[in-house]
Image (cartoon, rainbow, N blue to C red; front, side, top):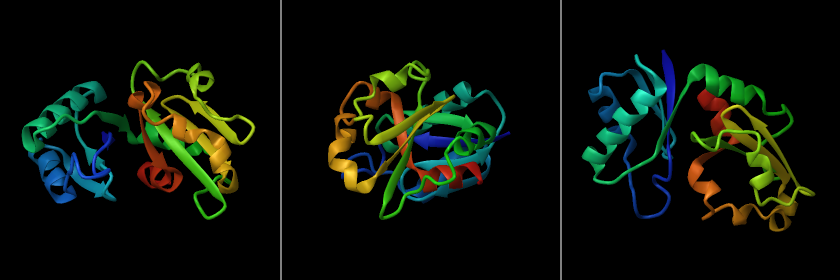
Length: 174
């Protein structure tokens, strides 16, 4: 089965550095096939056998052993990634006018009720829940009014891993 592993919080600053060649080698050492990484933010596409939860535990343990620190990993099937990407409205993009992000949700946070908990200014942020993720879009000129920065550091923020819409579409194979 085809999977995508999303590592949370790696290569964002000076701590928790994970070199992609070393990460790919780790996945191959775990017996996975067709291992590819995408950009330097902890995205790994691979083929393997087993349930996503089992694979997640295996990957997290291997990362801790290899790199010396814990990293939360979200494992989704390629089909789940496609379903999320297809829920993104076609006109939503990441460019000089718009910002669109996908927050992939860990267990416990994956419910439609999460929308009401997000600290966004709904006058300027259009946010939508789809099984496995929250997707949001805003006009960049409204970023300062969006309250997106209030999400960082919140308890909700620890229950998700963010990717921009371009990355989300690429990882889905769209």
